Length: 166
Image (tube, rainbow, N blue to C red; front, side):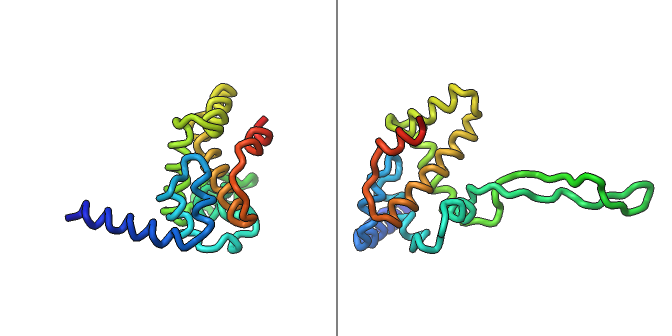
């Protein structure tokens, strides 16, 4: 029963995505595929909501933010202001969880699937960067490419990606 509903929802999602010309262009991005490109179109709706890629990163939970970890503390029962503030950097917690899952899943797939993204992944690992950070960078890269292709209406060109990461 549940399997039937899932297949029907998938068919309806793909049928709805065919109404948007950008879905065909987004499918060209390695590791995005028809389902993820349809979901991206459904979740983002219009790329003009985001002026820069960093705004998309923040909306999708891939952007860094700095938080204050306590300006005041107690010393012998008295509330005092710290001389040096403690800041913590982390990912944005107020975000679209579905969109973050979409880009992180695409990055995970891109890291194991042969192609330009896997080359970037292997080079970054060879530099000594942690695998989780490389996948986060890949997710940001896929999100930025998605936004650029959607705004400009261009096709995906892996040669541009190679020249960028060299």
